[in-house]
Image 1 (cartoon, one colour):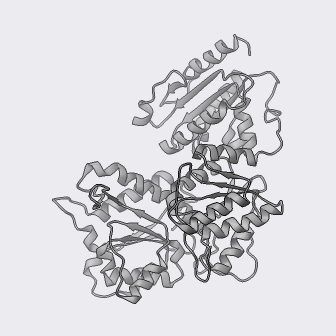
Image 2 (cartoon, rainbow, N blue to C red):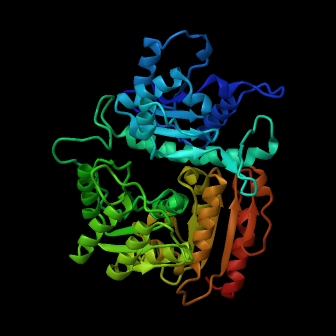
Image 3 (cartoon, rainbow, N blue to C red):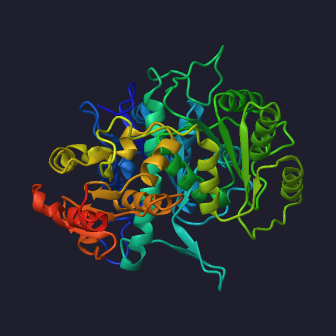
Length: 506
């Protein structure tokens, strides 16, 4: 059963057989390696829901068919998303282009992800091919090649024959997987196959679910040069339990784009706009780029006092695009909240803008004067962390909060950290990226605005055992490694450090 209701498969992989031919004695082709790693990273990042799993289809009999079959057309129509592995071979394959055209023709353009295996020139002589590639031009892509700046030549990532390419290859596939899971989760909320896609035209108003406990932030779509930084901001906002919009790709139809963005902004407390060196995509019948349209709509609401608008550009960045320079000049003149700083400064400013009235976050946590502990863990480690939580709370009589679970706003989250006497981060089944992001967040916030010092910080490395955990060595924070069942003795160094710093008083 597929994860997205109404579909037989969640992912259809479209590729040219020339891109999967083993080379230099390798047993596997490039596409074999890609699909194998894709499945591994999906399993690592996807939490199975009600017996469902991510279903992937790839036609391994590709070379044996003589013509495009009805069976394959049915497979395309019954797939929720479409990964096309672009290359010169793909662009020259009538079969591959038919698959791509078939998926686009069934309204699936916004469910396509491009994997560009090899740099190539897009078709320039065939008008049908030009139209097809123009249709997917601005779709999210992942480029599995690198340009040598010294020679100007391109070098493909070939992990099947070059071990040095494996780390970059894994990073790219993992980034693709994270974006793919976001898309699949968005599609999961559509009623069934054939229902309108998130970016397709709908008649009448759209009813979208709202969690009243979440702060809604509009994180404007930006240009490709800032895509990774936008993803970083989105990840951090999500960790703070913010509702981040747009939560689905926005249409390039100008009327629908304006209508949808305006409704997103009206639901938001803050809009964040990240300006890069490029101007961005200009929709048909428009003279403004998508980033400019989003900025203008937010600026209108900001002037009416209905929205806080924050605009950011990396320090030292310049542009050679006259349109983008005019855009930047207009922002400087019209927007009082314009920042040209480091990304970390933008994150800090976002937290300030979203801060509600202060509340006593420890008010329901027992006796005043007790030691306050912030215990961080990933949602999937809640069961494993329960013995630690119980011991600290019931045996040591500490006041314990789980900031990622217990707080409803950015300010509450920040206040928990700033009023904690000690911080304990449980590093269990979550991946290394999550661990790194959370630890940086703790480091950035735990000391800001404090009236008293932090008594102790510790990282508790629990099961499963990994090489990354084994390599952790430090005195501050304390590193606790326990890959077996919880025992109170494992927490002794952390508790003793708290008591020593507190002078033995609790």
